[in-house]
Amino acid sequence: MKNYPFPSKRNFLIAAFCLCGLTGIQAQNETINEETTAEFKQRMEWFTDAKFGMFIHLGLYSSLGGEYQGKQAEGYAEWIQSTLDIPSAEYALLANSWNPRNFDADLIARTAKKAGMKYIVITTKHHEGFCLWNSRYTDFDIASTPMKRRDILKELSKACKKQGIRFGTYYSIIDWHHPSQERNSKGKDAWGRWAQISMKPGQKAEYVQYMKQQIKELIDRYDTDILWFDADWVDWWTLEDGKELYQYIRSLKPSILINNRVAKRAIFKKDFGTPEQEHPGKSQDHYWEACYTLNESWGYKKQDHQWKDAQTVVNKLQDINTKGGNLLLNIGPDGDGNVPQESLDILNEVGKIRNNGNTFASSNDTEYSTALRKASD
Image 1 (tube, rainbow, N blue to C red):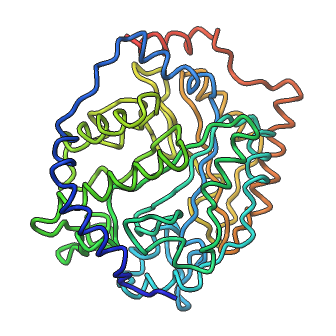
Image 2 (image 1 turned 90 degrees about the vertical axis):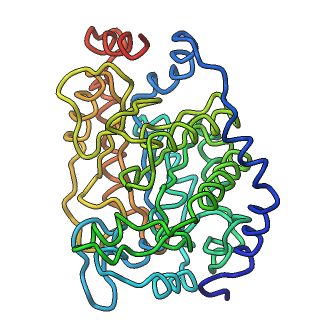
């Protein structure tokens, strides 16, 4: 079993960066043709029609369930490395026993479809840096775990296709494992130390190249329809960095959708805004999607039993839809890959409520139609 710091693919990455550096720089300077308003509206059409999607948080943190060495982590379970200040080398050893063998892509896709969800987004690399696919550019991935013979992203993308559901991939800009970044020793708390992780001097270009190579893998291997970024808040990631990455991604797949966190979310609104655990009280002048948890945590947390009931979910969905937005509702499989039964029950009930006549907002609703017109202007 390979342990931290997983040197073999790391060496490949350095070689690839050196050999392809010129190509990477050239690619960064290339821009695709700007879309017309009509073209942008057409690209967003399936998304606006979808209205409802599923978010999946799965990573090494799932096996901990919000607890490490007898200590309970406050807040979101997927932030446990930050919350309990676990050293990167120590945290990376979790990969040796990570084994969500019961992960059932078909069950997840069927459940999503029954609930009326039209797309799924899964965390392929959260802030911890662990990758859910066998990447050529790191050994901190599924291939270094007991799950090494499975490709769960391929399983899920195929299951989505079977159910007529779009497939999307989440990718964090920060990486608590990558050697280009280090814990911010000046931070006064967990947020300051880990969320505001430092970029080592002279390492940013190599890391951006690493991001691009991995993003290309996600597009080439899984034909992802959405790239859903996060952690744009770090000071070393600029608005221009985000805009350039946005152009690069669309040069690989022009039809892809990219959320606004690829750049600075407060300023950059393409392709869609992403309010979290809240949503606007009125229609917006851009496309948007509100993401919510079904309980309190995104990643699986043993002690989190604060579940929303199905009617609350339906009411929230309809309120969001009538204001022109989508709802991305999260599930967090446990360390064995099982979706909590409460999540399955709630989503099944959501589907029943819908089928019994409590339907989704129609695109003919005045406020909804107005929002779309404004977003396309």
